[in-house]
Length: 192
Image (cartoon, rainbow, N blue to C red):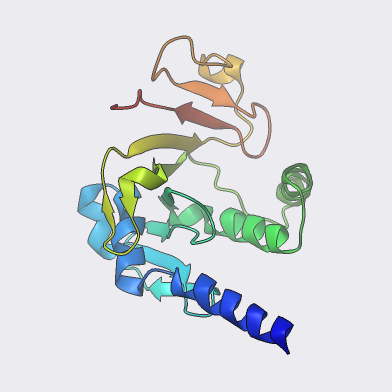
């Protein structure tokens, strides 16, 4: 009986840490361009901790709220054409697949045509802040940082002229060249 009560208490404490939907939406859209925030679709977490749609969108952006089980803030927004790719990654992750397994499965599925990956460049933006700079009760964030990703499937250093690693702070570079998830990485220098 004590064990059951303890588990219920732990579940209640963990569920109490899930920010209200309006806070999740407020922080999720911080990763989107300012003029796209009001119309972006937002995924987040309900009171049971389930990943759900918090708000339907009216434009081309999909945003993901912060995972309440992780420390700090880490939100992202991406072009809606990336949704099949992103949704498949989330599905495989919930199945307990490792990063490499997810990579390999999606690579095979994109090559076979089973999984859609846009042929045109598509954008993902990430906004993050450490725990001390984020208040999950109010959604206030100070000194957050952006990271930008532009997916260009099958691109290489040779086809883009981009280096395989940044040679200066904030310099674009290509990651996972020659694969389904080849992308340009841009990590602006941190503000602090």
